[in-house]
Picture 1 (cartoon, rainbow, N blue to C red):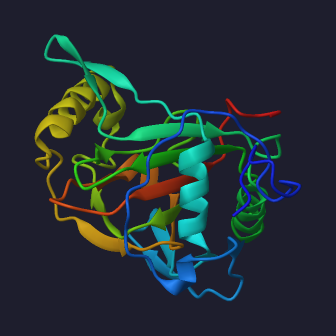
Picture 2: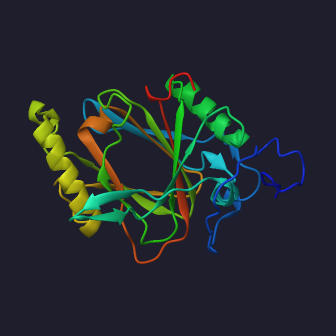
Amino acid sequence: MTTAGSGKGSGARWGTRSGTQADVGPFQGDLFAQGQPAVNASAAVEHLELDGRSWIEVATRWLQGGDELLEHLAAELRWTRAERPMYGQMVEEPRLGAHLRLRSVGVPTVIDEMASALGDRYRCRFNSVWVNYYRGGRDSVAWHSDRIGIDPANAVVAIVSLGGPRRFLLRGRAGRHADAAHTGEAVARAARERSEQERTLRPVGGGRSRSFTLASGDLLVMGGSCQQDWEHSIPKVASAPPRMSVTFRRTGAAKGR
């Protein structure tokens, strides 16, 4: 496959980006996830109402060639690993992350095509793309909502999964719909709970979770008040193949980019 900076081909499909390479271990994919990445316009989309204010949509095999895209992104993106304070010391988060700027040099053409297709369906001009890289089963993300730079009461967050299958969990936030949930004290308490959750992976918000197994190329979209009233996570497992989530958002911070 021609990759950015490989010197083979024009590179028009993938663009050019320098960065620190991340390893991709061997894993068993499927035929649909191989080959040139492209949006599958014929993929069926299932709409699910979570409550009167929140919804999700799920489409299997929305993107063809997901494994090919994963291998390219692993090699070409500038990966970072965030740290945050926990129990008096800095602890690394169990995953890698990278930011992409749409319609810019170095961004694979298919990423722009994905943003355009999603924007047409959801009438939202996505302007921010973040990629999480879960290198194995011990990489994870604790219960959280996506709130930075968006209106959590009315936001569309679209996630495209690449690589091996992983469970995506969704549950209602404790005390949702209550005004007290938006106070500074509640925000601080939620931050403490997330830190504890990252360390132990025990549910802290309460409530029954819904589980979706996302395979390479699958799409999951959260809308309405989902980021205000619901939380999601990728739990640790004993063993899992490499997996990435490519997340599209409309953020105020990215306007004009």
